[in-house]
Image (cartoon, rainbow, N blue to C red):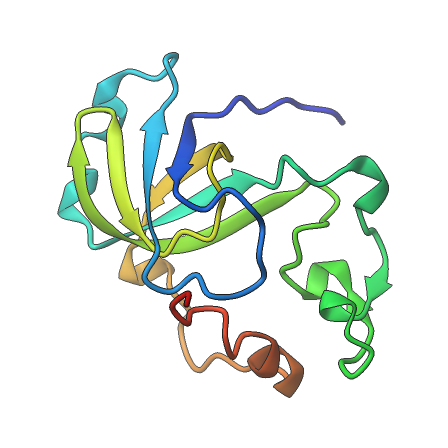
Length: 156
């Protein structure tokens, strides 16, 4: 089955280059696509957080991984399937991040700590509701904790 998805918005951010770490303290604007009515964002500012689904549109076809690899190509970490990691070279190139909502100005949603670069297509915006967060403890392997150690640090 094939399907197509049209962007609902575009990321406007100061970061134009992909880097693996130091997303902490970053801010971005998510600007609705012309095809989306401004009313599509009505009420979003009453939530503290939103989940942003976006496309890693700068990943070339030849770089897409469908099987297993070492995360960040680090041989010190175990080889795991692409669906067991959050790398950008995914089969459908879809990224997802929960962001803090800073405010809304018409067609623009101001957010903090969105790990997407300027011009990234946004395919969905969902409010974060407690009831959709994990129920119970979250567990992850040690390599994932190590990989994320500097992810949310501030740049500089």
